[in-house]
Length: 297
Ligand code: NAD
Image (cartoon, rainbow, N blue to C red; front, side):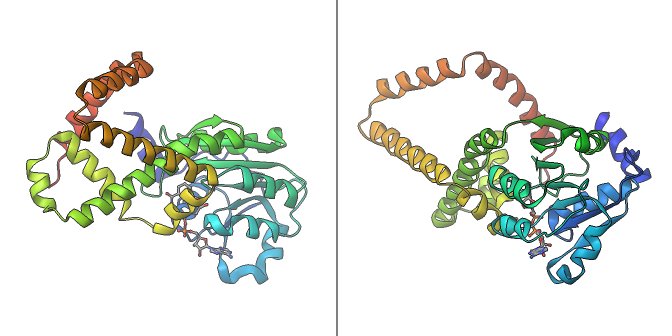
């Protein structure tokens, strides 16, 4: 119900939380995620300018009237582009929506003396609307001056989650880097083994169908985004190494036909999940039922 009400509100426009704001400038606003934010700001009554690759000669003129500048460029260019922003009006809010947070936030704090906030939308450009979508928020400075922006995004339906930038990056090692890596490797493995996908689908249980969809959808997207997310930190690579070692240890255990060892470590993991494992069983049951109902091919 909530999702539908937001969908209809999106067509008619959203309340403008800060009507007196100057212009919004979205750097990289013709890109996939930038475009979504451009649309949301326009639907909320703001005047939005897009600053793209060839537009830097106009940058000073655009910034002169800006009340908010949002950086939405490829991860590996983010710090460089922030460093060359030049002068922004003192009260202008500087924000970014990069998938990593600490380095861009530090760069923004260096580049601008006014209010700064790091945002990480925990969704991709393919969401229909922002209802219940999480946007991670890392304070830079001047929270009172960018509070309106958080309220605006809440009006879009988003849930704001405050976290320290370094803690965010550590959590993303698991939530993004390792997740995308294992998906990538499973896809690479499938491509090498070369099974008949249609037959896998025909024979699959709902959970395997869902897994195949989760893996397959990665490969319909932009490889540089995922490369940059994984390569963003050496901690990500170290985490991937530890995972790979555990993979091999488990494979060795099974090669030794060590069934007791398998059951033993299964129980250790089960204890670690504690009450969450039954909670997850419950939650995923509904997901799997829905996935099965929504089968498209
Ligand atoms: P994208 O490649 O679609 O968009 C980037 C845009 O930046 C492009 O339009 C490009 O032309 C522009 N650009 C490149 N160099 C520029 C320059 N020098 N000056 C101005 N503009 C320049 O990438 P995207 O997926 O939209 O990602 C943008 C940001 O959003 C990244 O920081 C990414 O981490 C973040 N993000 C993306 C997703 C996602 O799923 N796509 C999710 C969360 C966060």
